[in-house]
Length: 390
Image (cartoon, rainbow, N blue to C red; front, side, top):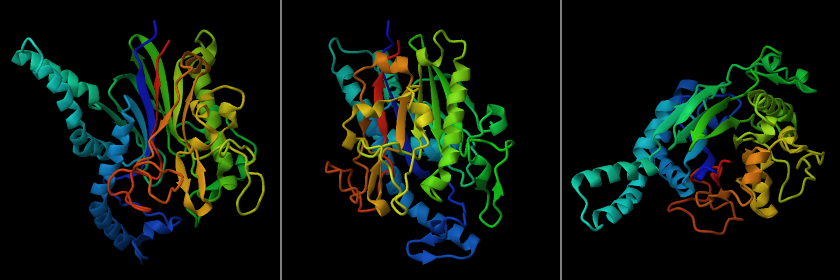
C-alpha cells in the first residue's frame, strides 16, 4: 500500500544569519551598508551587524510567511548560518505564525459533542501542535567560507542523517574535463584544484526517512554559485552534480532495480538552469556564446526526473536576476524514475508572494510590506510538491 502523502520542499532563505560577521573581498556588498562603504574589515563587520539586527526581524517574518505558505512536512533550506540561527528562526518566527492553525484545530475539538474531557483536550492539542511544528532540525557545518550552510526542518523524524562535506574528488573518482584549470581560494592567492580537495562547495546532506513503513532518502544540496561567470564556474557544478549521482548510485547499488527503482529525491539550489521558458538554446548575454548547463549528468538520460517540467514552460521560474532581466529555475525537486511514475499528477507549487515587486512577471498578491527590491522573503521562491511513496 502507498504511504500517506507528505509535502517536500526546498527554499533558499537568503542569508539566515544570527551573526553576520563575514568578510569576502570578492563581494563588494560585504563592505557596504546602504550607500555607505567601509574599507576597514572590523568597522564593516560592526556596521553590518547593526544593520542586519535592525532589518532581520522584518525579513524573517516574510521568510516565515513564505515557508508556511508552502506548508511542507520536510523542507531543505539553503544559506543558513548555524543551528542556532535556524532554531531561533523556528522559535521566534515560525511558531508564532503557527498559532492560528493550532487554534483552528482546537476549536473543532473543544466544541465537539459529547463535551471533551481535559485529557481529551490536552491530547488533541499535542496532536495539533505536532501537525504544524517543525520538531526536527539539523544544520551541518559546510565548506562555504561565508558560513552559509544547508539546514533541514521536518515534522517527520529521520532515521539517519549525514554530511558529505569531507568527500574529495579522489574519494568519488570525479574529475571532469577542464577542472584541472579551475582556480579557487582568496582572489589575492588563487590556486589550482587538486584531487585531494573537497568536491562540494557547501555540502551534500543525506537524510533517510521511514514514512509509514516506506523508505525515503533525501539529498539536499547547494551547488557552486555563478559568481565569477556562469561559464567560468560551470565545471565545478558539473563536478558536484556528478558526485551527487555517484553517491546515489552507490547508495542504492544493492537495491533491486538500482537507483531507478528506489525512493529518493534531490532538492536544493542548483545555481544553474538548463532551459529558460522551455528553450534550451542558452547563450551568454555578454558574449553570445553557447552557455550549456551543468545539470545534464542528472537529467539528460532520465537518471532523475525534474518535476518542474510538469508546469507550463513559462511558469517554472523560481528566481529573478534583474541585471539580465532573467527568470530562471535554480531550485529543484528531482525524484527517482520510480517515484515520478508513482506520482504522475504531482506538480510542484512555487510560492512567489514573497518576491520583490521588481519581479514583474508575478502579478499575484504579495505578503504585506514587500518592497521593490527589499524587504522580501528571499531572492528565491520556496518550491513544494506532495508525494506518496510506493
